Image 1 (cartoon, helix red, strand yellow):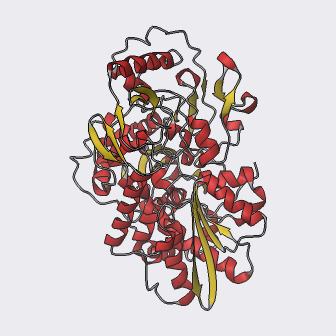
Image 2 (cartoon, helix red, strand yellow):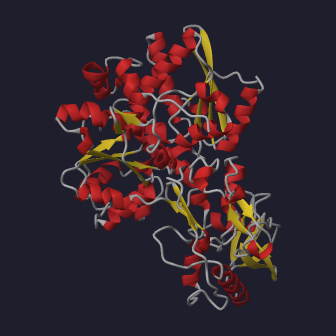
Image 3 (cartoon, rainbow, N blue to C red):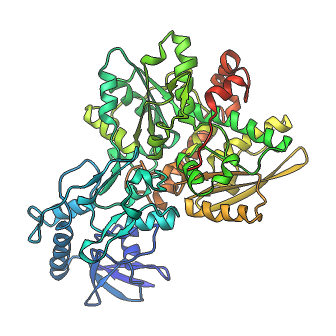
Length: 562
């Protein structure tokens, strides 16, 4: 079909909305309640345009042949300005480092203060969560966070509360967020257009640690960070900035820069060994991956009967923290109490995870601070460091050496693929002929495959988005599941779409980040976790063997019914 938008003749697919066609072709029609991952609702009325002379919302108007759309007429701009002022009347419009689409529109339309409808606000904040801050004074009632929590994640931790003029976004019975079934995934933060939801900011604590000369502060970067943080500095989506990021972080004052991919490799050696042990000795199956803390918390809240199915492995960054304060501390003759471990993660749930009482080794917390991708970018900018112009430098060894298997942890399916590369070799004694497990790549919500090892077929599944996980969990409860091994990531696309990543994040962006991770995997000299020379050395010198006494003490954990 053909549609004309602002004089441009464009092609549209059957069923596409006007807004979808516009955005796909670089025409930015303002929108606040629209999220490409969710069905359109037309609540905010910001995407109004003149369609064949009539004022219509474009997010929920399906294209018809030969439509003529005008996005910026005098009439539309006047109506849009009134809409912005009405929304601002409910919004405490203070500047923030967090993305705020409403304030961007306020600037564009040159609205003074909060416009003609301004009224006083009650500045109520919920700071009970380790991961997420809720600020009622900035909420514009668009409903995006509620829909994301219910439709994408099947958690329903937040909802509309009250009626009429007293309606607001809140929680059941007005409980603090920390007292709800919130899994800390941060997808509500990703979709909020007005700054009413944002991550807990830990930059001040990190700066204080760096400035304390008695502390030895190390930082580690998650697999997904290297293909996303560049966006915060204006680089194209999917740009790999690994070595520049290492250099930039050194300039901010960290003593050492480690790679969480090392922890991913370590996780695979332990997790693949755990799966083999379960599969061959009548252990609990299916086994679920445990590197996503939001998924782990989801099981603890909604499916506690399946806690035994979770791998006991800590997540990669927690493993790096544990190894830093034991193995590394001994090698460098450092006192663990003086070591501060900072993790840069694509995830808000990692902030909660590092505070779990189970995440300790030899009496010390594994990880002291977690910064999201967005926080890390703000920190680098605040310190006056130029990421784009930075030199390319290598991670510090031994906790900076990694493989392609560690890199792909950042994408949905990557953990399973990495585990299969190692498990197959452990069981058969032969290398995997084809390292590309294409059946579990890409963005379908539930993916599956099978592998035969020593005459036994093992079925595996990969799931991302907790609503998809719920579908699978209900099948398992009903006894309909055929799977032996299941990877679950809470966020759409896996860590590359995590709640701490650059905003916006949509499927188009997720695909480019995933492609970059697999490109990095193909270019590395080692592509199987157990081939990592530094991992081999760690076992030879310290851990001795996978699933051994020392490994269980430092690298494994337990879970809690909530």
